[in-house]
Amino acid sequence: MTPAAETTLQTTLGTPQLSSIFFFFLIVAVTLVITYWAARRTRTTSEFYAAGRSVSALQNGFALAGDYMSAASFLGISGMVALKGYDGMIYATGWLVGWPALMFLIAEPLRNLGKFTFADVVAFRLRQKPVRIAAAVGGILTVLFYTIAQMVGSGSLIKLMFGINYELAEIIVGTVMLAYVLFGGMLATTWVQIIKAVLLLIGVTILTFLVLVKFGFDPGNLYAAVVARHGQAALEPGAIVQSPIEAVSLGLALMFGLLGLPHILMRFYTVPDAKAARKSVLYATGLIGYFYVIIPIVGFGASVLVGRDFVSKMDAGGNMAAPLLGEMLGGTAFLGFIAAVAFATILAVVAGLTLAGASAFSHDIYVNVIKGGRATEEQQVKVAKMATVVFGILAVALGIAFKGQNVAFMVGLAFAIAASANFPALLLSIVWKRFTTQGAVWSILVGAVTSLTLIVLSRTVWVEIFHFKEALFPMKNPAIFSMALAFAVGILVSLATPEKEAQEKFEEEKLRTYLGVGAE
Amino acid sequence: MDQAASAETRGKTAHELVSSPDFKLLVSTRLKVSSVLLVLLFVFYYGYILLVAVDKPLVSRRIGEVTTLAIPLGVAAIVVAWLLTAIYVFWANRSYDPEVERLKGQMHR
Image (cartoon, rainbow over all chains, first blue to last red):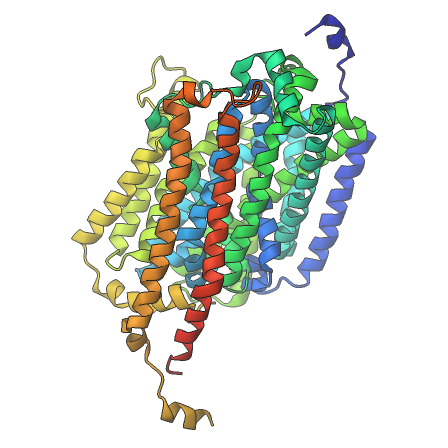
């Protein structure tokens, strides 16, 4: 970089700007009006958890995309491409390929068999109490780690972009999100996610367009500029994928983790039937795929136009690449828009997570374990709302408790637990007649404990956080072992503990899985 | 009217329906379609990831002035994933759903 270029680079990032504050209040105002509207349609449990199953396939497709594309994918992947080049693209593909697998294995049976949570499906023909408790543990662990990563990330991002204090940022996110979920339930959450998905896709499309304008609409010219500035290595795979087994393990965690994310699975209960569930996956895959195809262009654009030095000076992880590029190409007003979009992104994901966490507690634990499935509609809604408040406060408290900690590994942890604890039991309960209560419980617990332990013993936590000299587990991602072990335990324990009743009920389950007979 | 119709052709019970060849065929066809698509997804995605992990010189080969083979491969992994999803939906809408409706119609009410 020439000294002249360096002196011209300036940013208003980190100081509150009229434009970012305007867009921020606009988004909050619009979403709160929607929440007010949704609140009048959110009285029963089915309305609170599942928007009365009134969401159309297209709406759910957008909402799934909004629920899934976190700030980590928007700011994180563009930043990674900006700083590391091609390696960011490997991640981008990994974040997408779970969706077809979700379609082929889970989406339709899930919709046909369940009511509000994925535990409904696992417990369909098994003994309710033990299975519900185990599934809620797996679900809540997943949601909790995912939430911590989101909250800590959001506090730092909002501080970076709006210049407000970290703790205040946490409280703002927690309060606005609670308003959506508490009053508007799933209906408000759905619309927040739809709006966020639309805004995010518009923002990234404009950014991509502005980059391509600079390079005569030929990505080849952009790549040439990247190579001229950062060398050919920027377009080659680098250090991320070290060994084949590591690569496959990461791929498995990303692919099958999606199939065990409670906040994503829960969205399938918002559509009227399995056909709509199926179509919504296609829409979501298209939207998310489009996003991941164009986001590297934003990253490469930032690495050339903003420069790696300036990007990493603002944030070592590269998270500010997209906002800086936005300011450079579209001015302060566009930066304000991008900052507000990033904020909406966080709100939408955390709202979905809160609803999932609250449902695991209130629907699985309170209604089906404590009350034995016999709670009145009124009691259920009341407990659901109480659980929402508790989860919201917990999210803010954890966000503040983990301030300044390296929590990037927690997203990986959430995916590993989802793939190892939730997914194997869910799949076996749908397809395997001889699956038993004991098999489900042990599969979930072994999957959760193994993935958690191996990640703690891996380099990311053992060395980088606990500062031990050497990692006790050599890989970054344990999914290939923990997932295989969870399947093995689920199968072996089931074979050792035959359950006649569960086998007899399989006929009814099949009728519902394939034909939707009796689906709610 | 309802009674007359059901007296004439008493629909199948749940047990009869589940054990009928038609239902078994429906289940096995769905299993076949989804496993073939899943295998294709595995071949394409893990093929891509393993190629990147194992043969860096190959994926670093230039196909344009500076553009490496790895770039179109990454985009292709995403596009193929979407296409496989689309194939499943196309199949399910066209042939699975009508068969489900037909079988549901045979059920005893």
